[in-house]
Length: 79
Image (cartoon, rainbow, N blue to C red; front, side, top):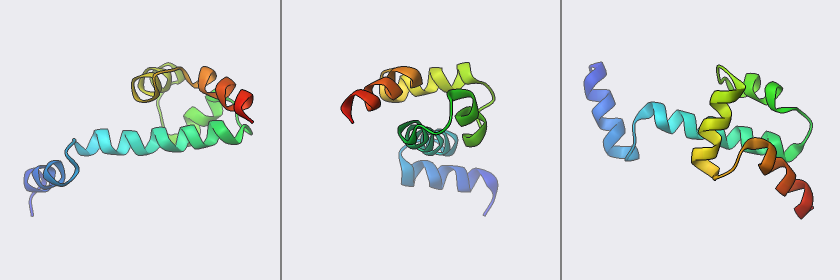
């Protein structure tokens, strides 16, 4: 299978592009690490493979509706 065929097949199966699917998985991992509370945001950025903390924050806000620091504060209040 060629690259274009694989790309189209993945879009059909996932209802989103492969890069968006991978980014969402990385954001889920970042959210889990934030809930653990052992690492700071810059360490989490590096751990999940984002290029910068600002890009992680932008993507995180699109996915979860709040910045990573706000997400961490909400998690601390709920425990």
